[in-house]
Amino acid sequence: MTAAPRPPRTPRSFEDLVAQAEAASVDGWDFSWFEGRATEERPSWGYARSMGERLARASAALDIQTGGGEVLAAAPTLPPLTVATEGWPPNVAKATALLHPRGAVVVAFPEDAPLPFADEAFDLVTSRHPVRTYWDEIARVLRPGGTYFSQQVGQASVFEVVEYFLGPQPEEVRKGRHPDSARAAAEAAGLDVVDLRAERLRMEFYDIGAVVHFLRKVIWMVPGFTVDQYRPQLRALHEQIETKGPFVAHSARFLIEARKPRA
Image (cartoon, rainbow, N blue to C red; front, side, top):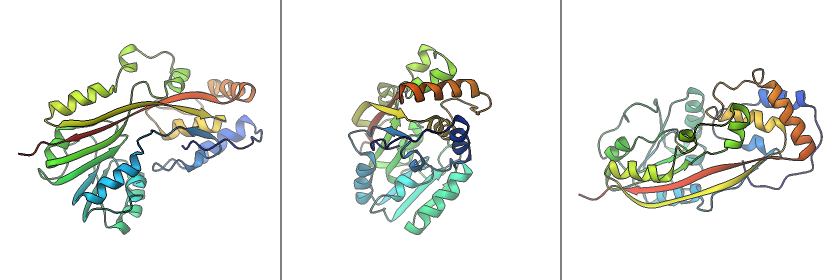
């Protein structure tokens, strides 16, 4: 989602908005469907641009959990050796179509298994919004002096949406994904953290279709979400948006850059 201004709204029925959202594809990490329906502030550090700058200087790069390959494919220059991993079959197909013409290899690979690469194979490893970061594996495949560069989801991200549907979450869940925990895990794996920044960013959902599409696409927010299961809550939220304006939430993001010490 982008931070573009909201266009004039044309009233539509609850059923029409939900049907549109249910029919939309949720493959990859293309968020263009949200245009005019939702907005999200972007972190100040400009992850895609900064990632592209690092890729241009690398000789061998690995992008973990690449999604549909959209962020990697947008880089102006890719290293001579560029590999991406992805575990969800529809995303693997989409990433392959985007990245093969750029000379990048896409490896279908489950996110919770050891990386299928030799020790010290890459001088740059990147990942945007990984579900989980396997720090020991990242440290293993990095060359001495190599860098891990990642934008990650932070604490209690979009919990206004989560708690609307699931109710108040336990404190240990709300406190998860803290940037300091990422720093500690990186250091425990033998990496030096050279940059760590966090921001909380405003999101606005302008119609109930945007909420439905978001929950279908970001499936870990409300696990097992279906329209039928949550229809009463969705209808109530639709009426709230129609009478009071956009549903406001806040995403949490942090940037971490860690370097493997030279031997």
